[in-house]
Length: 167
Length: 45
Image (cartoon, rainbow over all chains, first blue to last red; front, side, top):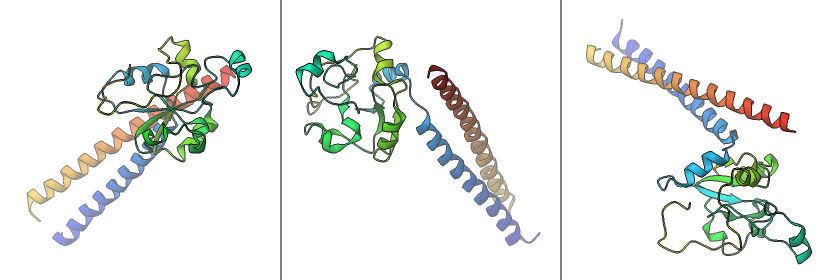
């Protein structure tokens, strides 16, 4: 066979295979985004300082008045109970986010979205902003059900130079 | 075309086929997990 034709055939096969690998890779990445992360998986990942992970809490930040606070459960508001190190971003909306928290939100980091019960609607909204986001299955309620640690009070930005796992 | 060049093309093809099979396997696993999670969510509702 003419070497030029043979070479062209090999290159053609390799090109087709490479395109298929890229397409399947993109499908895999999209599917991974749809797959929610469980509370246990998140807890394990947060305990591993080698894994760079951002946790965004999309529940309302704090009760508006004392009556609301009296009636609220710890899973209703960020300030009443949140995953240690999580960043508040109510409704995935920057305009509702505390000013201290805005500079710490990175839209390009692997991110876990925490809502009250794993609401897929809010997660879809967050997917428009965060490039690599996963939903916490069952939301903060699943985290509490597993007796994993919770922090109370307002968001405190991390100190400069701090590092390591947050659990 | 030399034997070495031909061998390199075959190596490339085999590597890509293995990658393709690996990714396909991962996709099937994740699809199964997603359908399992969806079924769980629906039964909880």
